[in-house]
Image (cartoon, rainbow, N blue to C red; front, side, top):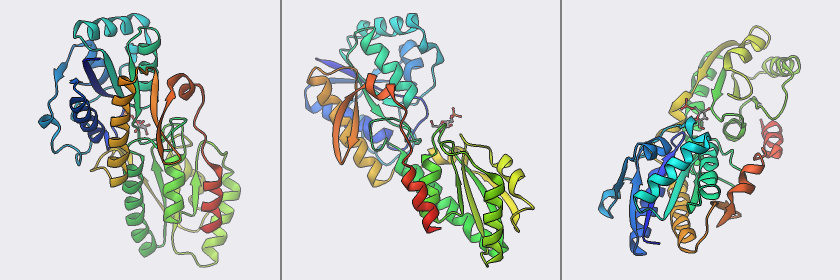
Length: 319
Ligand code: F6P
């Protein structure tokens, strides 16, 4: 293996730059030429491929987003598109590819590896923490810290005005961001797609708590469960608080990565290069019980990552 390439794909996640830096610097130290592919699979199809040097990735670890930029590329579900991508990689002499991204990007990586026979290693990067077989993906921790900071601020104003806030967070079809951010901010309720909500029971409980003297009410709702507007329609006028809505939106994807994400990304970037050098393909780097391992992409994509319902119980117990 002489020349490898790295790309970021799908929704950006804080820490992707630290992963790029690790792939480039470790790759070069191992005697490889490292190329960057701009704008994910779309940029690959447009042949936006350029060499990266040791110095070109200096000062990027602390930056949010991805210096390689990213995109969603729905055409990549088609076999002909992937065959074209493989041709382009071969034409550029690229012997191995590292794809940093979410679940959709891991699907693309698996097909490129298994059907087009390109050695590909996936690195999980998404704020949603919805990729199976890894305890954490790159970007989750930074996102959680951003959400917690926002909820804390909303709590200040909620208490001052004795109001309820319905706060909608991202996560696609996963309730992970809502569960953990709700737990660690002591939210009064957490609504997630994994557990059906009974609005009647919920509003009765929130009203009782209000009558017992609570002066604010924070409800965190995962976007995959319901919109904050729907939740507000069900709860307002029934829980004894004036209600406000906040949709945190894409602020959750930005910001300088936390130490945890920088470390995870650095470890995974190095592990991805090692995997290519060891002849592995169609695998993803994963964090399992504190260790970085590689797991087959086929296994990762077979199952949906389950939300740990004990976390929800814990949140309920402590709020
Ligand atoms: O997968 C990351 C994520 O931020 C999800 O939480 C969210 O549903 C989606 O991407 C938003 O996508 P886009 O940036 O394309 O609007």
